[in-house]
Image (cartoon, rainbow, N blue to C red; front, side, top):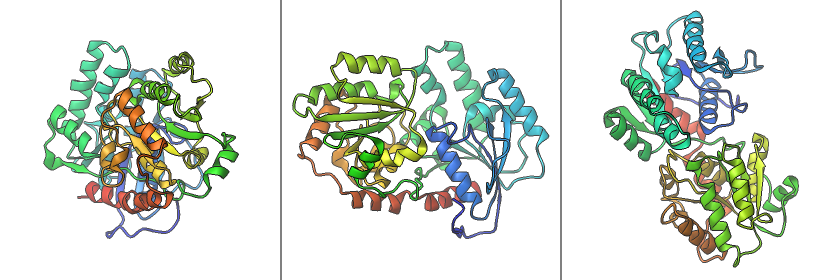
Length: 389
């Protein structure tokens, strides 16, 4: 990460970033995005301060400054108060740019952010809508999230970055943000971490995975919107014709017990392995061990970071036509986008791929496509240009 310097084409800048948790302790896509972006900017020439919740108090050899504002285990109102008070206590000087990533933690700071500094919000998804889908949330809570916290925060920002046109449309239509404030910049991948360093056979050996099966892999939060239930149903449909199929599922979530029970009821005990939390150092191995990565999302998939992680490891990806995912694959392997998010269409496309009725890109083609379009070195430069515009 602290490797060669990138020339961003202008003098060093001071960038204040407000994130969420600390990757890899909080192994979410949003946390990874913020981690990679801030490190890439700081390791080159910018002075970057990352504020967040649950950040380490001391971390050796970091190219950026960490400011922990609150404990993630505290009650929500106490957490928000701590964010505000600790932010005020730790201010020294005025940054050149402010970059916000999460409305809830940004909201307590809106009136005390330095005046005259451009504020860019990275919109990672409609928080209130996602909450409504995943949790039996009270209507008042949804209303407050949507109209008080999200809308107020966005109204305070000067410009926005979205990872896909799909999420740009949500930001524009649901939150009335004009398109001239919205910049579409895809996510990036660390091509040194996610790479084709092992053959599929060697990767399977290292993970203890079967060597004589057709292996599917998915790395997902086990929640409704990610569609693991649909994938299990699709597996049961194609199993009679492809009995050796084996699916490895990495991730945690409130649906884990429900999904494990579903797999048992579908007779897939010998075809599905729930891995739970997969450490970050094993993730590239898992991608390399698979014949195919599957992204069966049903809604709110703003980008699909796992797609470019998998492709960087040389493994092709099958996805549903949801959110920003088709924007990644449309120009590369459009035949691997299902016709709809339904179980039957996922099953149909999976069967065609596994029976080799659809041509899939080679390991080299997957890797080359990713390094050309999604290398963090290039993505960070694009983001920086927006932050400092």
